[in-house]
Image 1 (spheres, one colour):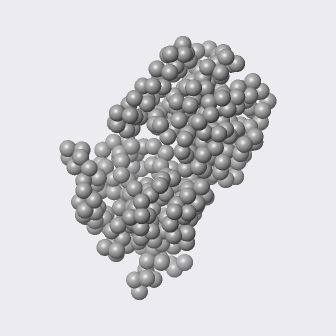
Image 2: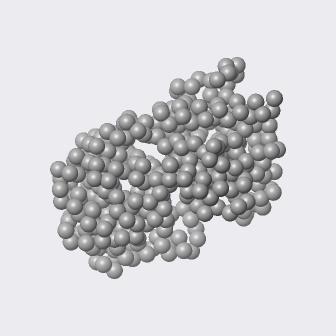
Length: 387
């Protein structure tokens, strides 16, 4: 690559003020590059208030305020989003613009021919895209798919294969690592240290499938009477159907007489420590491009029972680091959970294997280096095309 005479300034485009898996994965790479690549700096184009803005401020990253909504929270028309984004880009003065989500990648692609810089985007979702949406995404210089499953899904529907690179998300393996059980979490829940803690972590949403765990709960408790289910995360959608879905989970446990076995924890900032207190992670998603919580569990040495959807099999090796079950099958889910929780030797072996695989495959340093290389490639391609 050609030598750079001034810092490479990457503008990161975020749609929402939330701090969920996609945002955490990007910030993990930023943290790594800020310490290892002195000639790279970052600016964010994002909502200026909220958990994401706080996390950016903690890192000393400048935020150029931008939103897709009006002051009254109604969504801007596409043309207005494009115009205000161009203004924000001009203020940020980046070398390259990277969209951190598929929806923002569509937006950057739609204005790519009006910019003097290259645009790239993450593909963190597996969606059935319209023709115009696919055309917009294809106008970006390069695209990062978080899993091979994500790449294959989009390429099969018309995305340019030569523009899509797979980069698995990475983790800080010091932040997430096996540590001795201390018993503080059972104490917080008012439970004995001997209680079996089964957690599902993520947004409370239909696609995350928490209702499947509720359906499997009776069979699990029948075989493991001291099993307790931790629902860690919060609902971000304000749609009526999303609110009803969240309410239905607690109601299902109550109807089954298992309300004392369900613990709704909300959003937590101490997930790395919580994982050292948990016996098993259950990830019953209906759709999952590449679940960050699966990486976090693996790095912490916690086995996983997950539905075999999307990119999950690229993280969980069935029978070695966890168990994979068909989506939408509560009997299979319950069977896999019970088989592990009643076999302490296999549970421990899977935890050790999961940590080893995380060290080998999902180190954030590797992910950050690949991401930087892709950004530099896009910058060079754009410069060559301009000349």
